[in-house]
Length: 262
Image 1 (cartoon, rainbow, N blue to C red):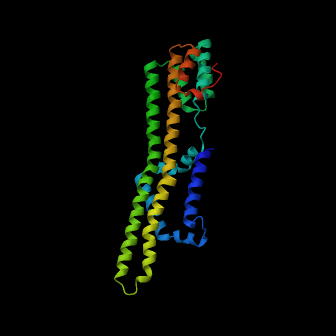
Image 2 (image 1 turned 90 degrees about the vertical axis):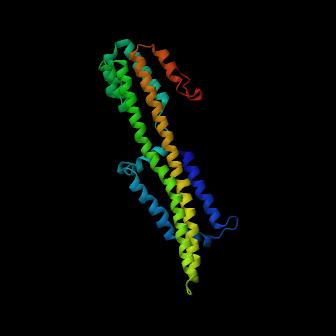
Image 3 (image 1 turned 120 degrees about the vertical axis):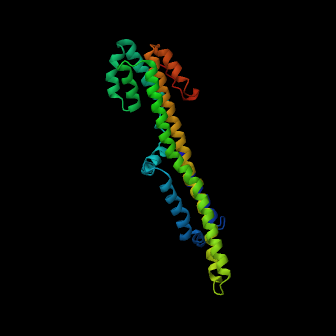
């Protein structure tokens, strides 16, 4: 569970809510001053409409998965892959590469399973690396589409906040020319100001953090896959399992390395 994300998001909304209520003198009545349906339609409605028009349908359908990735900080563990690769190396050294087929069948990670099977099938080292690195590049491109969607939202929301501001100011100016239009000036000015606030909230408190975490998860997954590539090619080259483990540990920060290095 991504506690830091939850705490940060909750605190940001709490602080902005306290500001709306006029802290330290709390007045609940002030809260309704910040509720404006025209502003919601302009900022929230238009932002999501533009996103729907700008990104593939698959990216929109992946929103629940993206939220799950943001919340799960333990999706990718380099040390787990290093331990598994060490086991594979020991098995290959003892019983040969063909004996790894059983270990491949037990793998839940499709990429790891594919990597082992490339060895079992007797592919040369260059071909193994080419296939696996191409897989990583394509995966990174797919992840980039998801993160870019939220970055797009982070850029679009303030823009529609400004559009809402212009709409409010235009209505206000039009009202100045009407003998009975002065009563709408307050509402028009409110729309002009509130849309800017809604745009900033949506961009920096919703879309921005999600995009940042998705980029982080993508980097973590790429690191794990790079470890698999180096491990598999090292096994194919016949490296000593202990040396291979030490080499793979260089991908991991010193404080994250397991005390037991096998």
